[in-house]
Amino acid sequence: MQLPTENEKDHNSGSARHPYVSKTAYLGLLLAFALILSYIEILIPLQIGIPGVKLGLANLAVVLCLYLFGWKESLFLTMGKALLSGLMFGNLFMILYSLSGSFLSALVMAGLNRSWSFHVPAVSAAGGVAHNMGQLLVAAFAVKTYGVFYYMPVLIIAGLITGFLNGIVAVVVLPYIQTITAKGTA
Image 1 (cartoon, rainbow, N blue to C red):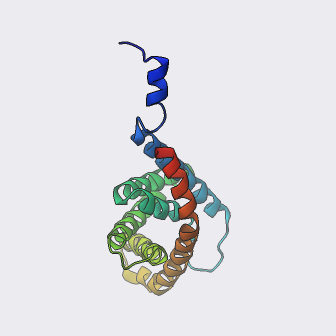
Image 2: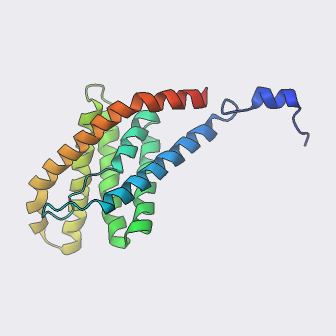
Image 3: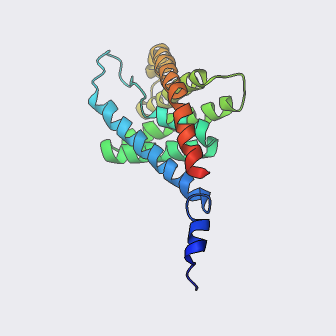
């Protein structure tokens, strides 16, 4: 194997030679961002008396990924976030709840994203509701009672509010990240 000359190194250097390297790096950063937000969310006590209501901060990374890279990458990020945050900060049950909610949320957001009539906050809000519904289904299965569905109205409202707010943050942040990623893959 022959080593490249200095001229070839300059010509082939950077992400233009291997754009998948940049994409992988950005996905890794988004996963790290999601894990940091998951940890921050654990530190914020939300005392509203309803179990399972969270801010959904880590889903901001998933929304950003969906609009930056697409649905496949956001699904990958969703699964990575659910597994790693569960292993790092939770337990087996947290992983199951997180996987079910995150997977359903990612599918709903991916489906709505394909339709141009939905804006980022609406897609994110639908994802928040879907996430809560996925977790509610697992809870009903785990405790073997439909009584958990009494939480549904509150969880729908919470998912709409937190998802919408995450969507607004995504709208503000996306142009800046798109500028950075465009420079990194040019």
